Image 1 (tube, one colour):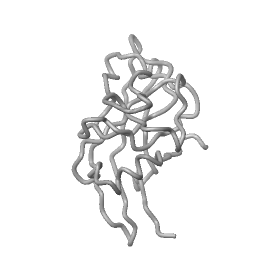
Image 2 (cartoon, one colour; image 1 turned 90 degrees about the vertical axis):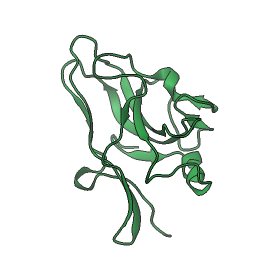
Image 3 (cartoon, helix red, strand yellow; image 1 turned 60 degrees about the vertical axis):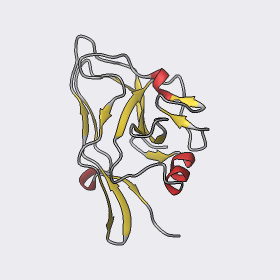
Image 4 (cartoon, helix red, strand yellow; image 1 turned 135 degrees about the vertical axis):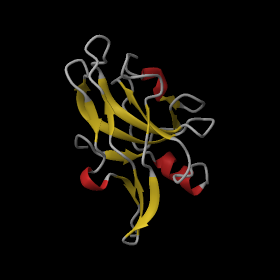
Length: 155
């Protein structure tokens, strides 16, 4: 898996078909976690707080001025059809530099649904190595200019 790749949990995609997630209206967040638990596509019942088998919230990076409990709410979220392809897009997410109390151990971003009472996780982002905001900001730019978080193509 390359740095910056977004991988969807199999359970997260299954939950879309079970009407658990409404990508057009639910509050989607991205939280940052350490290397304590390595996410995989097949991980059982991933969530960020709430209930489930794997609780990524218990491995959040340390809280500070820039990073607060639960991570950041995605803004500019759209769930539309783009050129015949169902596409989830979101704005760029940035954690500002926090020299005094910033984290130094962010290895994974976990995308989850905060509207869902169980806070089920949808996807994860490989940050490549332990990231820090003590010397500068951390930005998640999704898929560059298009900001595609998910596209569903037919096989």
